[in-house]
Amino acid sequence: MKKIVISTGGGDAPGLNAVIYAVVKSAYRRGWEIYGSKSGYKGLLDPEELIRLTPEKIEDIMPLGGTILGSTNKGNPFAMPVENLAGEVQIRDLSDRVMQNFKRMGFFCHIAVGGDGSLEIAHRFAVEKDMPVIGVPKTIDNDLQATQRTFGFDTAVSTATEALDKLHSTAKSHDRVMVVEVMGRDSGWIALNSGISGGADAILIPEIPFDIEKVCDKLNDNDLHEKHYGIVVVAEGAKAKGMNEALHKEKNEAGRQEVLLGGIGEWVAKQIKGCTGKDTRSLVLGHLQRGGSPTTFDRLLALRFGGAAVRMAEQENFDHMVALSTPDMVPVPLAEAIKARKKVPVDSDKLMTAREIGICFGD
Ligand code: F6P
Image 1 (spheres, rainbow, N blue to C red):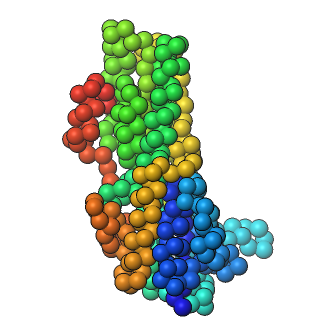
Image 2 (image 1 turned 45 degrees about the horizontal axis):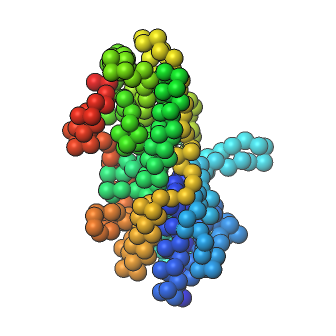
Image 3 (image 1 turned 60 degrees about the vertical axis):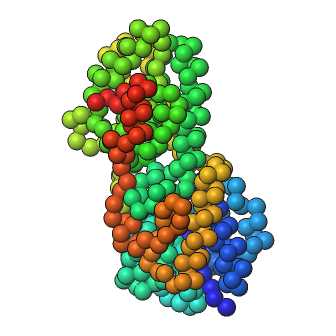
């Protein structure tokens, strides 16, 4: 009997459980045995942390947020922080231990569901350790160039849009400017899509360095049209003209995700208060965007990713990632998939529409 193992790594995203659901159902129908590795590679480092997944076990997980397997962005087996007897933390390469367990368990394929960092680790295992790996892209940021969409993004945008809808009434009641910081790392997709749909006055994204005075002009203009409040959406990676790097709170030692972005919303709010004199508040939507049940769109996309991953495993199309290339799911070499980040094209129809309906980008 063929055996496969699935893991979920990096930050969670709504739809992870739907991928697991589809993988388990499709693999089981082929007569395969399926195991889940807890918290990324934990189950492959210690087989006691492997869970046998059967259709009964996953029957009701499809609409659930998070991942039943758990996830971590501090779990790179090639550089694992391990505490020694003296209580000191040392970085060790445990990749051989992963391979020993992988072989001992008799797995013929590892389906690694993750963002750029986890896919890079999966690719290293394929190239350096000959592990048969298939990647499934996941991130709410939608910033992987190789796939038209990642699951989790639609849910995050819906959550952000709903928040903006709610902020309109309170902002209007108090004649206030509300500045909302959203996630997305170095890409402005969440800010752009939610900002347009949520009726923002200004959207600030990493792809367009902004001039705060332009944003203030836009908010002052609102008064000429009897609108005395404003909504500004700021992507966490947005930068004012002249800022060398995005604001960040702390170093995150995990793999490639080195800095924890954040703080630009508050900065923008202070500047707006200073230059317009308007009562201004800021809020950070943060991990709300990663939580909750996946939208229908994300659920379906995640199920399709899971089904396609099993088909690729059957065809032994290893060291590849499943990608959406509408209307199909196609294999893309992992090496290619991890190379480029997807940025918002500044001349896209979406941006033109936004400008035409009066949204300011601070440029
Ligand atoms: O990549 C997904 C993401 O949610 C980013 O949008 C955000 O910058 C980051 O992860 C937050 O990471 P953490 O969960 O470690 O705070």
